[in-house]
Amino acid sequence: MQNLPENQRIVITGVGLAAPNASNLFEFRKKLLAGISEITTIDLRYFGSAPAGICTFDETRYRKKKENKRGTRAGCIGVYCANEALIDAGIDFSEYDKNQTGVYIGLTEHGTVETENEVYNISQFDYNVDYWTHHHNPRTVLNNPAGEITMNLGITGPHYSVGAACAAGNAALIQGVQMLRLGEIDLALCGGISECTDSFGIFASFKAQGALAEHSDPKMASRPFDRDRNGIVISEGGAVYVLERLDKALQRGARIYGEIAGYAMNSDARDFVLPYGPRQAECMRLALKRANLAPEEIDIINTHATGTRQGDVEECRAVKEVFDDCNATYINNTKSHIGHAMGAAGVLELAGNLPAFDDGLVHPTINLDNLDPDCTLPNIVSHKPKQLDNVTTILNNSFGMVGINSVVIVRKV
Image 1 (cartoon, rainbow, N blue to C red):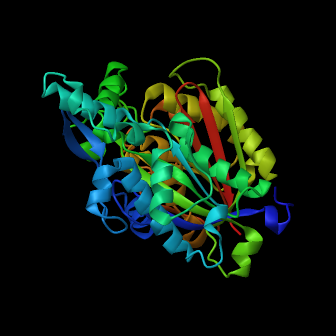
Image 2: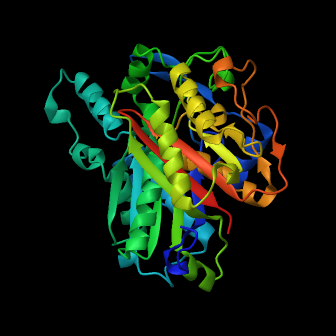
């Protein structure tokens, strides 16, 4: 992909995000470098208390409280992130046509929250469905968050959601790249969103699987690679990127975060929930091939590792298989700070690493006090940042249930 003409090279020029510890990239990066987690404890009806990542951001900065009430939490997060991304990119649509702008949003799930709320609501009225809201259908269709973004911004190009479990953020980013290369659009807003902390069913399901994290201190509950980890910390969040063709970005003098140099997606075709390292390794190899990069040319690997034993171990085996003897490749994990933001995980985690192109720092993995021997990898960065002489490439892993794998490689321009 490095030999493509400038009008086929796709770059990131804007990032807007809402994370459990920050509401913009500058603060997010600062917290990651400092190892600051703001995971808290929440109480859910029927379920009880659990550690979770909750976003705090200005929910009425870009639309009114009444509009947020009519829409969804996912839509609220998406509208905030999309507006922030456009401002960050310096785009006011004087140089782009809204008819030629695409919105692609990755989701792990959507509609669970709204349906649970409505079932609970009618339970207060002896399950009389006359009390079921007429807003339920537009709130629960899968394209809802992407559609809410288009309505807020007046974007009349294509919009849809990409359902790819916890690989969805990466998948939506890949979708934006492909649509720009095909000439279907001239500008892409793409990323991922999660509203799942409002769903007791998601917590209950992870607990039933034995995969929900518990800890007396919620900030220490997310512990990828640690011997004493005991599961996933569920988080909400979102990140939306502005993608442009390189020639246009250069023409308008845009600040460029990096170029999408390579990507890949594949399937395990094995199990509903259990990850499979060999197929993850194949996915990384394919992304490297498409980027025309050798494994030793990757500076940072941001792992997907969720804090479940099999998930962490399978990914470590895959990374070891592909990057054996890559002594200058450093490995970190972002979920240790923010928990697992599901459909937003991949793009939030990539966003947190993008500033490394400028500052040369690999942010640390936190809560890694006793490394699991089965997760021993060279150059895992833990506790404090690692300063590198130069960072030119970042590989971002995101894997999901029903055996879906995604890898995105970003290169410094």
